[in-house]
Image (cartoon, rainbow, N blue to C red; front, side, top):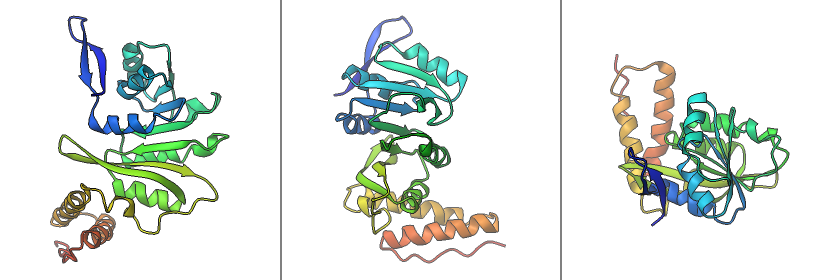
Length: 235
């Protein structure tokens, strides 16, 4: 079991297991010597990596997040920086891998869109908390090489994770989300995504949002093998 020493209210050090989704990323980081954890939050993944001898830079965009991150840091192997997305990495030695996890799809895409600021091509370990299809479409349009992909369930939520490389000679996957189709959690994920959009279309929404939802529902319905009938837009 992978765990972390943390202090309780009395200041005593206790062992708290690392969440499943972070355990997955922790495992993926093992081959790398230098890892950047973008939007590290309380730094749980950063500290787990440092405990295993990996040199880690943990970043936070907000001052509150930075203060929390600094307060939790207990190892010299972790350097802490404040800044937007990948900008804190610009003047640092190259990182082997960059973790972008624990945030919504819009922020994930914002961070990935800054990769041109780096003079090298690191591995990106990506794990959004929502917007799986949005992130995957971005990877497809940017011709990212998906080297590894996995689904993990944590407290009822299913997280998608990718290990990707953005390179000129990469060939994108031929089928959207095809990397997950043999995952044991794929059927459940597809069912949930389909049901969520079917329920969303039962309520009044803007024409733009209606069309977007129908486009997404069409994909999830087909990937689930359902061929479901789309609900009519309420008037």
